[in-house]
Image (tube, rainbow, N blue to C red; front, top):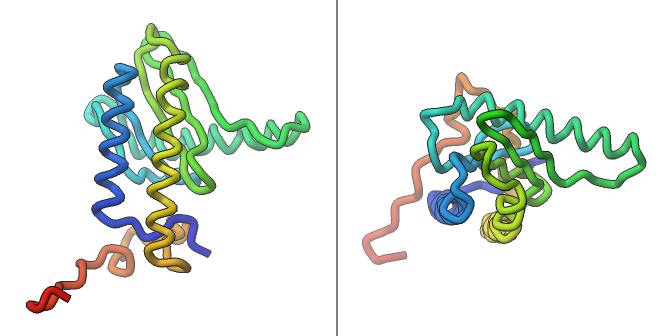
Length: 166
């Protein structure tokens, strides 16, 4: 079963816009959207400073471990994780059923500000994912079964429009 809808350039562009807004309001370094399997979907901010692919995988693991802890303490859900460091901190929050929003920010910045501005961003991410689902119900991607050696089934050119504009 597909975990993500088929994402088009317009979806990624919308994600980029909301992540840029988040970075502006919070003065965070980097914001990522990842799937719960740990795959990086998109990011904005200072990508050169961090290994975002590895961060995506580990942040997903930390987030999912906290979900397991929630079950062990008879909680239905821990929907966010905050990790504070000396130089940088990280906040990760659930963004729908399939994705996690991860924000990396300087440790001297307030996590409260990040949480406050992350909430409407999560809503916009979920809204865009719904648009993508509705565009092509039943189709999508399960990144956990992706063969990175052969991605021909994932990356395809857009269908060319006919000269009549159809």
